[in-house]
Amino acid sequence: MAYYSPIWFRRLVKEDHINIKKYLMKRENDFRGYVDSIVPFVLWLDIGTIRERVINKNKPWFEELAQAVFSNSEKAKDTNIVIDIIDRAYIDTINAFANSPRYETIDQDSLEDRLTLLSSAGLGNVRRQLNSQFNKPLIISNVTKTNKSVMVIFPGFKTLDFGRVFKTALTKIVNESSTLSDQADEISNISERERFLSFVNANFRTLQNIGHIEVDVISKTQRFVKRGQNSPKLLQALVSIPENDPAAFQKLQLDFSKQTGQAESRIKIRKNFDRGKLVFEMLIEHGLSVGIPESQKDNNYKAGLERAFSIGSGLTAQLRSKISKLAQIFVELETSKSMRQHIVDTIKSALTKNPIVKYNKQTTITEITQLVTSKVKLKNKAKVSQTSEPRSVNKTKPQPIVQPDNLLSLQKLLNASLVQQIKQNMGTGGRRDILNLRSGRFAESVRVDRLSESRAGAITAFYTYMRNPYATFSGGGKQQYPRSRDPKLLISRSIRELAQTITQQRLRAVLI
Image 1: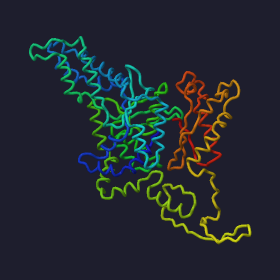
Image 2: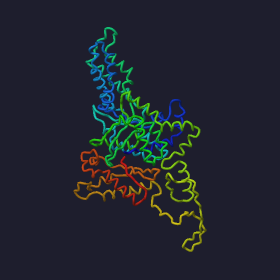
Image 3: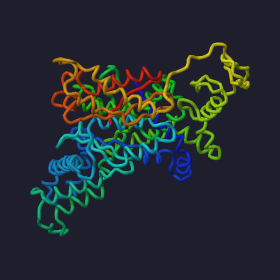
């Protein structure tokens, strides 16, 4: 099993600790309120899952609805009438989201780009990436099928408008239903249509809630199970666990699954691995929460267990008890290195002119670096003044790393040679396994648009190319097979090869 730590969330917590403090100071509103308002939430509506987890589990609710609507005792016994209407309302809700002109529709590649930008955001830039990449609802086309399913990524849990969309769809179906009488009831003078809508509006929340779910996906490349279950309480617990301790993460995941009842309602997406499954795998890897409609009884049961989850509750108590020292907690929060280590590291680097040292969990920040001076003479006979320079305490000097002065310089160097490198890596004849060089238009359309560097030292190159017509060879295109012809593979390889001749830092390429 695998559990992914959303590193970007830990960075967000550190950079946004002032707003977190405000949430913690509010009555009845702790860490969960912060998470629900700012972390993207994935709503997955699948009619098969809804039928299983809402409709089939709410027989008493449908019996009450039938009795409230129909005065005829025989008709009131037939719950299938109201179940059919509710079922059609869910299907129309799925289609309303899928076809909504208010939302942006993106495919798997675009989603991957956005998630990559979020994951690579350094400290101080996470919230900016959230606001720019997930500032409005996004419909994911790869798992959206008319009358069957739709996936929507909302900017936060609090921005869901599922209830409004469902009630709009239900009202339309009820008003057009031939099953429900147009005639007013003799006793109450209220039509069956009115009673139907009145009952649902008054009792909708007793039918179902939107609940966080646990998703299992078998990795397409590594062939092991990846488990996604980033509910607010679990994210809360993640903050207090060192991210470089896989064993602690796996134990946390298993404990959370068992203690909160998630294991009993887990969704397994394992057969017939396709692009839809890849979307779920990406969401899990990047730490986004997934939720679906489920019966209120099941949701309330798990919610109570989640609130009592010991690790998350302990962190809330810790933060509240040390509210005057809240900033200190976030200063010491472990990411790739703590804020305190980062400050010491920067000062030390400036004093010694040595490359910044990579810190790990065992690194001490109390070490003292001695600065020594030596007289330097140039080989020519011109008189020069003596100068002093810092020398490393170690006798052997580290080999200098050949790298550009900054990311902009590296970008210019890459673009200067990228066209030629791509042409060199293309086929020269009629090969079927890779793209062949003909007019050169494809290679000349590729450009590195910008670079970013993570705190771990990894560089990400964001590039563009002429998608029309060359995206036909990419995943999902009409000529996507063989996969080895995907333009993204060729471009990424060429960028990495060029980067290796310029810098020793790790580099990955991402399409924008």
